[in-house]
Image (cartoon, rainbow, N blue to C red; front, side, top):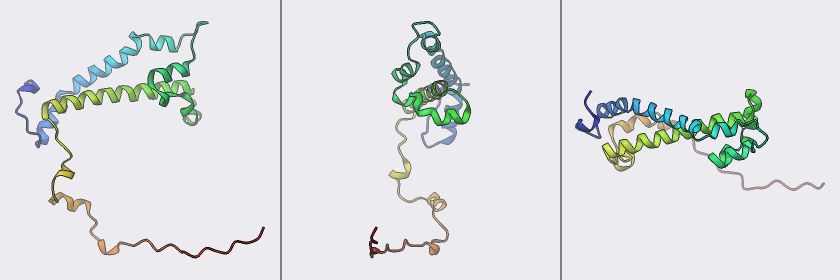
Amino acid sequence: MPKMGDIVRNKNSSDDFLEFISYNEAIHLQEVTTLLGSFVENGFLKQLFDKGPQAMDKAQLLVDTFGECANPNNFTEQAKATNIQPTTLSLLFTIAVYVSSRSWDSFAARAYRLYGDMGDDTESEGPSVDDELFTSTSSSNVNTTPNPVLETPPILPD
């Protein structure tokens, strides 16, 4: 397989971009592995699951590491439904979101470097033939919202 930099890039070619995605699969898996491994290497998981007398507040550690969204209090309803401790559920969720987000940012940066700003072509172009796919075929059946009643009912005594 040729190196991605050797390929002639056409930002309008879906085949080129699909090849780019395929080429980046191994890079993505390596990044995910590295990001997940970093939680072991930096001692985060050891600190989180430490049972010693100096064990810190696990909820606070999650919030300090990932932000307020990782607060186990945000996961109480899901924890009840899944029979998983809120701290464990918070840990699983926030690590998954963190790794996915970082990996996506890296992929998007590589795509931008290679293809440049592909823009939002739906906003920059005029009407196209494909726009017909998203319009209703029966526009005569459009209902209008009725006017609200402006009269207020009388207030009854207590």
